[in-house]
Length: 228
Length: 305
Image 1 (spheres, rainbow over the protein chains, first blue to last red):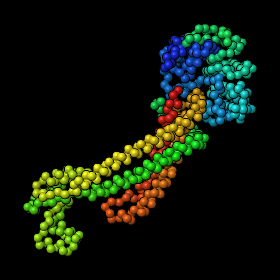
Image 2: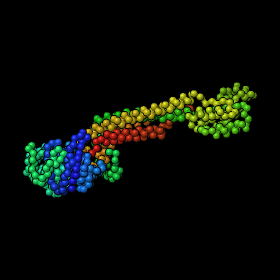
Image 3: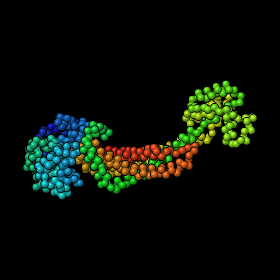
Image 4: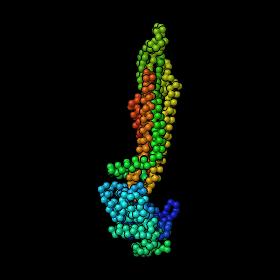
């Protein structure tokens, strides 16, 4: 599914974020990415949806090297990848329904299908009754659920989450994690960067620890392993 | 991001295009003051350009009229017999750059003079002091001097007159005027383009998250770009309304005033129609062009993935 071979990334300012990294993630896996700040987690995540390109090495998704992907083909790659952020990135002027529908509108999906799919995923994240509300009227957890709904509405094969519980209280975080479990159970690969020790230790999955641009630990069902 | 995707445009569904139009119009309203500012800027620019084009085109017309009036008067020497004159006519007509050469005998010349200056000149009919004359027109009025020099070098030519000095000055003046006008118009257009591109940039900054999300969920560059390009186009169209109105009105007044006073003169102004419609179309086209180009320039850097 996802395969990184000797991925090396040096930013124009001279910082080496990834230092020849090798990893393989299979379809349907649930992977935590852990490690101290500035260790290369974000760059690692951004490689997956071609926000960043490796300076050298191969970045294979579905067997295709997306490092070599032409810029104009990138949108089509992203249609198979859902992304969730710590700060939700919802559009404040649009209501819940419109925020989710937006993801399908920009890929020019048929209105009939948009309606069906949006209600389906809103039902799944438990926000069907709040479809007409605006982001500012929702709690943080609810906003994150909207953004999750948006990321899965076009049924991506991979879901990438960058600290999705970073702004949420523990109870809400667990709600979000349950949602992720549910999405993962349908066969979607989930790659989640996190600092949340409790979640990693309780909800056991593969843990990849990154430090200094390299994988220092890769354990199926591993623990968080850091003190913070 | 020079790589474009024509197939995406052609495949762009009508529904999507409708969405883009709606979005671009909404954005105009949402950025009320910026819209107003750049529409005003475009208005002022296009008004100046419009008036300028109007003046330039008319000057050009006047220049053309005057240029077409320039002719060379060739005096044939008295010792030329009929035969030589016929040869001379052929020679002159055969020269490069000569459009026409009309022969006029000294008797005809005198008749013209008598017509112009009165009967007392008819005294000269007994002993005509005038010369036989060719009236020569150059194909390119600006070539008059060269043609005149060539003719002067022929045999049996007494003298050549073409308003030396005066027409060179006229041509120099007209050419300089054309160039200055062109440079001014380009400078104005550049300014307007810069202003529109700035406005669009501000509306883009305001919609940065939106663009970011669009790109994340897999929108193509064209999908992101089109609403901004349309917005630029609206700015250009809105900005060209007042200039078109004023230019039409102004030219109507000018032609009303000038046409009767210029009738029978050496030069005329351009007719109201179709000239003013051409100018209007030009203003509109320039508005649309600077709008689209201005927004194109400012989106570029925001689209880098």
